[in-house]
Length: 483
Image (cartoon, rainbow, N blue to C red; front, side, top):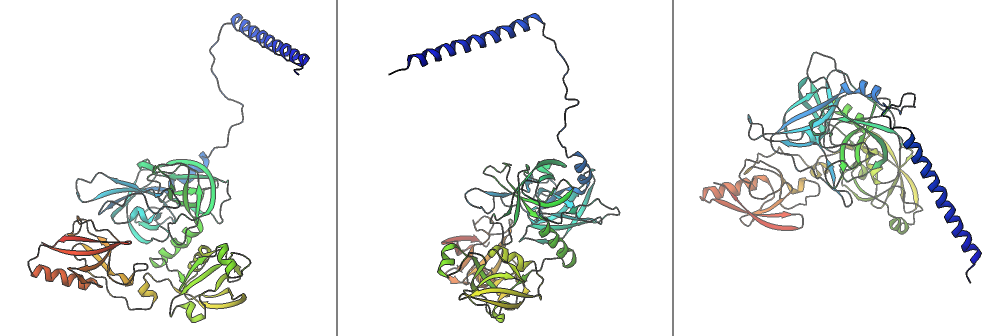
C-alpha cells in the first residue's frame, strides 16, 4: 500500500523548493537589472602566493649546458630495451638534417652540467656515443669545444672536459636520497630549447627498467623530453639528486614518467673516470638470481631475501673462496641484502682487491665466506683468465669478435660488434649482434678466418660471398658484395 500522506508531503516539499529557487532567481535578476554591468581591473594582491622556484633556478641554471655532438652515423632509434609492456626511451635528441660541410655526419643534441669549476661536464653516454666532435653551450650562450674523458655504458654516463681559462659555475650533489613526494626541478635542453625548467615530484625510487645490471632509478613526474638526456634534476636546495636518462612513453613524448640516475651512483662514476679514465668495479665471479617464493620454499628458506648463486665461474674470486652453487648470499659486510640487484650494486661499488665478508645460507646453515674481490672483466674470456688478443681490423666494413669472447653470444661463430655505414656490408641487412656461422659453407670462429675466406673468394674473382648468420633463434643467409 502506498503511504498517501508521505506522497503528499514529498509533492508539497518539491513545490516549495521550486518556489524558493524561483524567488531567489527573480531577486538576483532584479538586482542585476537595477545596477549596470561594470568592467573592472582584477588582481590577487594581498592573497597568499604559491611557493615558486625562481630563486633556486636563478642560482643553478648557469651550471647547466646544452651538449651538441657530431656523430659519424645516425644514432639508433630512441626506442631501447623495454620494461614490461611499454617502451622505455632514452631521449637524446635525434640527429638534425646532415651538416652540409660533412655529408656523412649528423648532429645529436642533449644536456649536461658542470661538476667542477675547471670544466668537467657530465652527460649521458648515449648522447656522446659514436661522436667525432663535441660542443657545450652555457646558459649565457657561450660555446666551448669539449673532449670525452671517459664513459661508463653500464650506467649510461659520460664525462667531458672543456678547456678554457675561466672558472665555471658547477653543481653540488645531494648527500642522500630524496623522499617520495619531494619537489624536483629538471633543467635541460629539450628540442634544443636551452635552459628549459620543469617541476614535479619524486614519484618512486629503486626502479628497475631493464637498462642494465645496476638499475636503481629515481622516478620523477617533471616533464622531460627529447634533448633532456644528461641534464640534472635538482631538489629545492639546488642540489642534484639525479641525471635525466630515460622516459617511459608509448609516444616518445613526456607522459610524466621519467627516470634519473641517483646522485650517489653519479658521484662514484665521476670520481672513477676523473682518476682512471674508466670505471672499475668489484667482481666475485658468480651468476645470481632473485629468490622467488617458490624457490625459497623449495630450499626451505623462511624468506626471499638474498641472492641465489646459480653458477660459479672457474678460477674466480668466489670459487677460490669456497662459494658454492645453491648458496644464498644474504649479507655483505654485515649488512643485509634484499635481492640479486642489490647484491650486484653493492659488489660493483667496492674496489677490486677489497676483502669482503659474505653471509651465506648453505643447506639451512649460516656461514661466512671471505672473498677478495677481483676486477669486473669486460668479456667472458677475460673472466676465464684467457689472454686477450688485439682487436682485429674490420672485414668488409664489419668489426668482428669471436663469439666465445662475448658474454651471452655462445661459442661457435664470429659476432658482428660494429658495422661501417660506408662498408661493403652496410646494405646487406646484417645487424650488430648477428653471429656469422660460416662463409661459403665453411665454419668460422675467428675474424682472421673470415678475412682469409674473403681474400680467397676475391682471388677466385668472385663478386660476392654467402654468409650463414644466426640472429637470436633464427638462422638466415646473407650475400655480401666483395668487388
